[in-house]
Image (tube, rainbow over all chains, first blue to last red):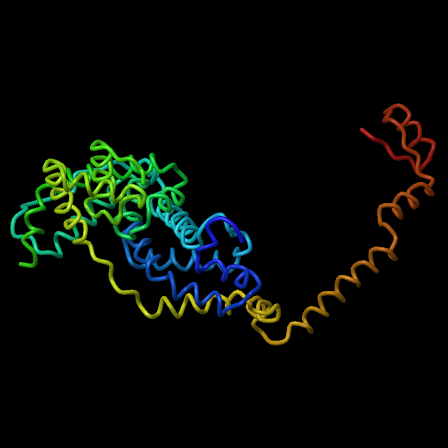
Length: 190
Length: 157
């Protein structure tokens, strides 16, 4: 094997999955399903939709494992497949809205003080949902999934410089949307 | 180690936030040293850390066991045998009897189509053998014919 697969612990599983080895497939489920679910939930905004995205992703793994090439890490490929599944789902859910072109709206919707941590989480959720899809994916991959900049750039199909621009713009938009809520969070659980 | 400028550290903080573990590995140590040596950068890092904490208010819920069950069942579902797939289309028992009937009906139709003469050809042959004469209508001739008792004439208006 060559490229990224040399130090990829998942790379050996892919040829086995391509040959129909269910044990290898289930090992890949064990290693990545939970992270992919968290990733998908932050992209599509709800648990049921995220579960569908993860199932679509693993169905694609089982059917198309032979198409994976050692140039990409398996986990990066999984995130890319999951992102595409999430985009398909968002397009079906909101057919009149291009998810790539969604612009930030102000999610501030009432008095700021006395918010619980749960309400703050909901505010963060709404602010992330309101980001343009590429900024949202970049933030979720790097901040929440702790993927490297290079990995996140590969998932999005952009250069690292472009990824850093997406991240910076996304964080600025989130700061603007959440500005009034910050003291509530820093104060911790009420 | 990659050379890192103060401006580059600001770019890293703006993009990746305050945790150096999220910064590119080849710039991490140099960027950390710059932050340690520059109070302004340290203040920007602290600000970014507070914002990171705000983002972390959004927790990831634990996955449902049912999802894992569904994921693990995908190979079994995808490996359904052809007979199983056929059973989903024809849930009324063994499909071979109805299938044989369908084939027999199709063969019967082919045999009928090959052996029975074309009705149009039969009609043509029959009409070509009659003594019927077709002429244009002529009232004078018609009257004359009636008068003479001639039959077997067919007039077309």
